[in-house]
Length: 247
Image (cartoon, one colour):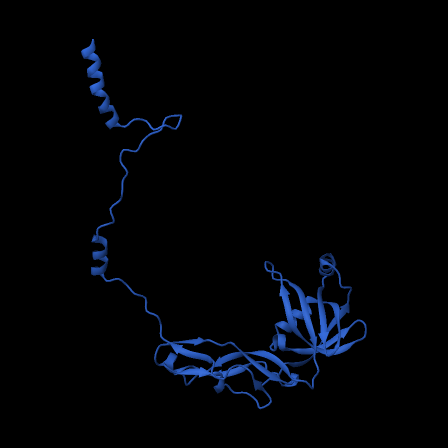
């Protein structure tokens, strides 16, 4: 199994720590701002070529890759990428954090878990494989960091769960993730409920909820006062009759 220790070099230039305008100027020059720290030394602001950083991030070992960092001031040390930021819309690298690495001291890292093999529950019972844990947290020397952990799922059937304790690993690696945590299992395919013709007909024939219709809606005049309704007009008729008697 390959490890994260690779023989490549990332060149970096020292820069002056400044404001956002300074960071924009670094990016206009085709570089990205960053910082290097660790190993009991001072933190230093640097600038690096984003293409070289992406080459490391997209490699087999990814962000766990340990490489040679060559500073313009003459410092040379082993380092790895511990944090990076992308521009949310265009996806360009904006900033990167590097950490100096001592090859004789253990590191805590997370490595990806790859499922291998065809599960009996998928092949013979028609289930689907669900992976619940995708990274394993481990502790080991830099030179022993694996690129990934292979998890054999060929024996999984319905009702069986692959847990962290069953994952293979070298004696040089200490697993920090809870041993009882599930990694993968076989689950059944969820069936889509299709309505029968009888159910559809019954639903179509069901009476709809009565719609409440407001009658006798009052119209308003230009001043906002309510116009008299028909009932009010009927109340005026006796009054007209009374006037005729007086004549």
